[in-house]
Length: 427
Image (tube, rainbow, N blue to C red; front, side, top):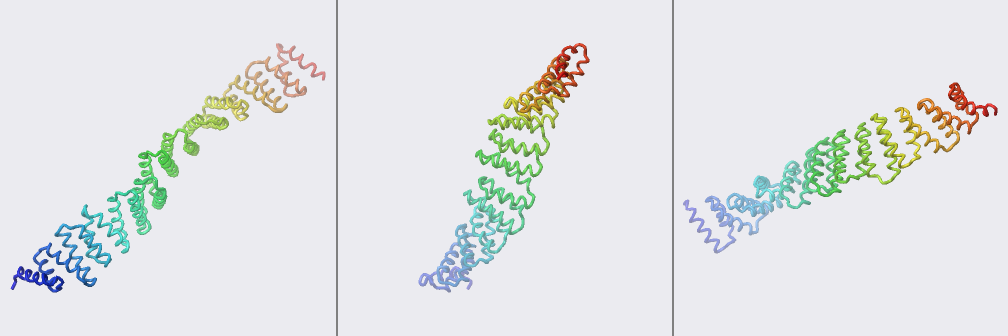
């Protein structure tokens, strides 16, 4: 007769007498949907769900109920709960999965929908969609630990399942920014960066983290590791700058200073290396270590930078710590000779002579000193006295005898030298 309202009323009368009448429930299911009476439609479907129906029917009823709750009744939570139950019973149910995927575009529903779809996509091995779902979950997660877990799972999926370590780098970077103390995340990030050559991105991440950290020890770790990577990439200036940041945190950081020493030596940056020496010397409390640093600095100043004056000062600092240091004395010997600093050389030779541990070595120093006074300093009297002292210890010393015989040709010194040589000739 086309009187739907009367039909509905009649079916309701039947249900009042027998609430489990299947034929009436099925008819009302169809009629309420036809007339778009969604609240009543949902009540009927829920009533049918409560009856003992087979699984296929139950899945269909829940799916239709969830659709109405989502699209017409603004009962999103109930709809999501029903979609979850459907997928538990029938993981391949396309309608429920598509509906949940639609919810991913709704800000208020996307998190809960993503939490259901995560397991579905993983079971289906739909890796792209799994990554998208994990991303949604990570953005909405308030628990930092859980957020890091999700980001690392994204990275693992991208790297091992899709063969995309470049995408894994981005996920791991976010995880590390979230919790910079996670060593495992750092290891994974560096591994992926190495696979795809993402060193620039890795350095950006480490720098951004190090700058923001208030934990000094952790910041130091990041600056040091960043420096090492920059060195490996031959970014010398950047590496030096990062080492400087370590020294800002602790001016006495010996690891950073030693690393800078090695970096500047390897790259021939001698001026900067001298600066490192000076800083290390200021911090050094062990006199032997200071002595060694001064000596190294002096060698660089002389040999690499051609600044003999500063090299001499450095060697003199060594002697102030160890007046008998043979290496410093020998180095200064050469420097004074090349720079024609005869007075300084004479003092140096006297010191070497006094410290010599054998007669032969002392006589050698005495001869050099006498020759220096004769030939470079114009101190003939002093030279004669020096040669005399040599002959006192070795009366047949040929160089001293020859020197005196040569000087004896000068009228001014003939008598003095004759008095020295007469007994020697007699002997």
